[in-house]
Image (cartoon, rainbow, N blue to C red; front, side, top):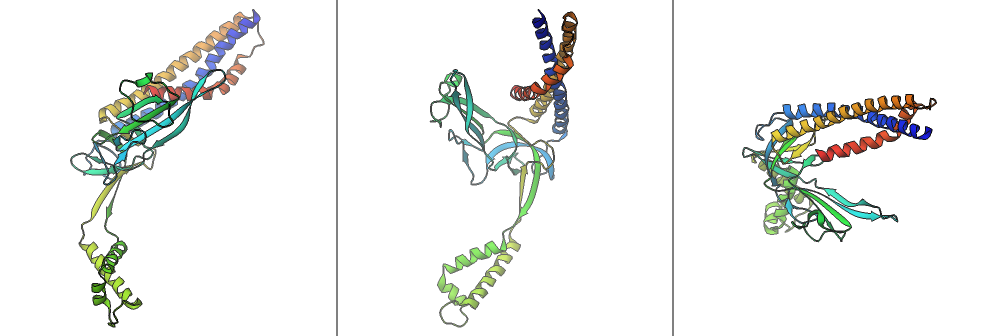
Length: 338
């Protein structure tokens, strides 16, 4: 009877310990989410052509960057951004199984964003991407033989699990990040080298133009004169060439979120509010369960004969042991729920 009463008391103190660790963590995450939500909501949606340098919110259609068409690594489907993972099912002697990551990757190649008024490039490295396509399927090979079958879904069997997420050309995207623009003109040295290479293809004209001593060949001094002429001509071409302004939106230098989402501005704001609400609700629930556990533990202790039992000490030890595991579990749960 004594052992049963101690187990009941331990059970209530365990609930109080775990929830006591989770409650402040969830409420803290809620405050961070509220700050992030305000930043996302207060950043105005602007046109690409009129966007100022710095943290901006843009919306437009995705397109492949010039000469940079991409295909997904697992399925070879055309896209502008991809992320994939391959996991292998591992079984132990007891028949229990777990998934172990075999291979994974994320695209960092630039793609274009156009809104009808202008165009910029998007550098997706380190971005939080919400894709338009997200497929999970299974197979018996370490690499899938093709895209997932529409009728197969989760019923497919196999010891390998493939996950692929895509953004496709033409998708409507909303991007929040830091916009940086710079003007590009041709390099004088590169243009001079190109001119010299072109002149060398026509040796007859090159000799006629720069062979000062008329010996039928270009010596070192004459070649230096040709090089200087190429530099002067390249500089002249650069002065008359139009200046190209290129804008790239990428990861912010501060703590602002870098988001690429296949949804409109209003849906992004609602999603951020949902995240803040989920964390706040989890914090309140954990705080309530902590108080409930303490109250019942004290009541059970008073009703039992185990006066030497230290509930506070058990609370501290259980919190230290189980707190980190609960934090990881709650974080993964909320990330999937959102």
